[in-house]
Length: 118
Length: 112
Image 1 (cartoon, helix red, strand yellow):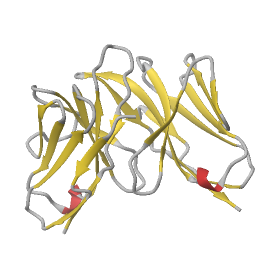
Image 2 (cartoon, chains in turn orange, cyan; image 1 turned 180 degrees about the vertical axis):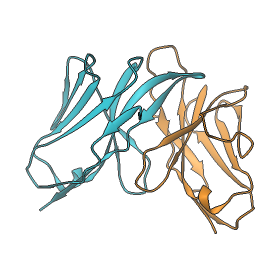
Image 3 (cartoon, one colour; image 1 turned 135 degrees about the vertical axis):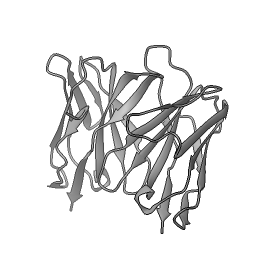
Image 4 (spheres, one colour; image 1 turned 90 degrees about the vertical axis):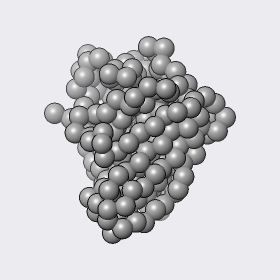
């Protein structure tokens, strides 16, 4: 399967700082990338979907001004958690897909980034 | 109502046991169906797709009933290495195309 990387794998920061997480598709071009968040013992919750070169589409309840997503190229998407607070502490996982043709194309997941805000 | 619902478990079974997980989904527009496996503090990994005709991969059998919007996973001859959280997943249309929507997961613990 295709490989998706995330960086950093773990970050600990003080409340009020901003944190940028990078997601890269290493051996394929990802038309669409997804960002998920998972709290302990909860399911992965879709935060937003981004198509290369266009603005991200956020799920209901996700603040677009707090979670800034940039998908500037077919191999890179970034998620910036602005002014992070302890309640933002979570496991953030990105996923990449080649293209959506109406039928299913597999989503490949990154290894995740564990964010802890003190 | 949540899009995908699963019994969270945990299911604690001995090695060699057969265990079944159930899942229901609420949106009839769901297009594709999957079971993923997630180990502690790791990303989810695709276990198998689920088809209406039912499909089998070794010790794992998945079934889909579109009429009742129900998905199942059967694991035979459980191994210690099967211990993980099993996520029921559907592919749903959204504003940006389609996206995978996850259930909360069912935790399986296989003991010797």
